Length: 333
Image 1 (cartoon, rainbow, N blue to C red):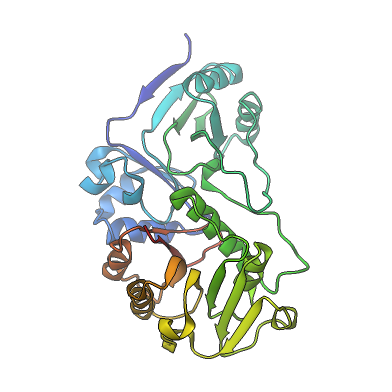
Image 2: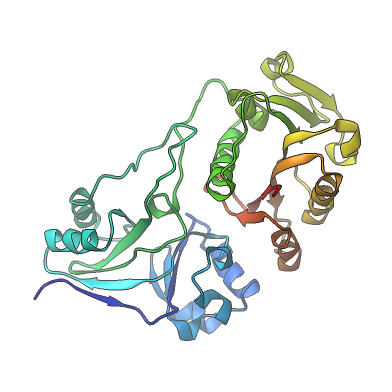
C-alpha cells in the first residue's frame, strides 16, 4: 500500500514550544487565549510539540493567521496532517510531492528521521552568518510518531527549520551575547517589514551597557547614540561612531535627542513604562523603526501585551535568543 496522507480536521493546529519553555506556552494558551486546562491535558504531545484538534481550541486559534499564533510557539503547524508510509524512501518521496523544504523535529527514532531528511532537498541546519539569507520558499515541518507514521505541516509560521534561527557566534569581539538577540530581531524586521539598519543610519540604543546591541549596530555601519547610567565596554567608548550619554534613557525627551532611523531598547523595566516610552517616540515623529524587548515581570499581563500588539505596523515575537521576554518590532508606514 503506498504512502497515505490524511489531513487533520480543518482548524487543527500544532505548536512547537521553545526548548525548556513549555510552561510559558501553556500559560499563554490558557491566559491569552482562554484554553481550558482539560484541553491541555488531553492534547496529543510529541516532546515539545502539542497537537490540537478544533474542538480543543479557542475560536481565535482555529484560523491560519500567523499574528494570532502563540508567541511562545517557535513554529506553529497551520494545517497538520498524518502520513503513513512503508519505507524511508516512501516517506521522503511523499513529502517532496507536497513541497520542497522540510525540516524534521525529532523526539524519537532520531536515526530514522535523519535518514528521511537526507533524502529530502538540502536545507541549511547549521548556525548562520549574519545577516542571513532569508529563505524564499515555505518551510514545512515533520515529526516521526512511529517507524511508519509522522505528523507534519507544509504551512507553518517560520521560514527557518523548526522555527530555529541560530547564528555563528563571535566569541572575541562583542562585549556580551546580547548582540545575538539583536541580530535575530533585525532579521525578523527584514522578514516582516523589508527593512534593516543601513550604513550611516543614526540609531539610539537605550540601556546600552555593556554594549552588545551597540556593537551589532556598528557592524552594520551605523552611528549610535548609546544611553545608560553605566559606561559601555572600553572598545565602544573609544569608538568615534558611538556617542555615549550617561543618563536614564526613558527620561530624555525625543525632541532633545533628534531624529533616528532606529530606536532600540533592551532596558529592564515594567512593560507599562516601556509602552509609555514607545508611544512618546512614535508621537514625536522622530523615528522610523523600533526594536524593544518586553521584559516579563512575574505573572504575564496579557492586557498590556494587547496594547503593544494593537500599535499599527507593529508585531510581537518571541526570539530563539529571548528568555522570559518578548520582542516588539515597529516600522513607520
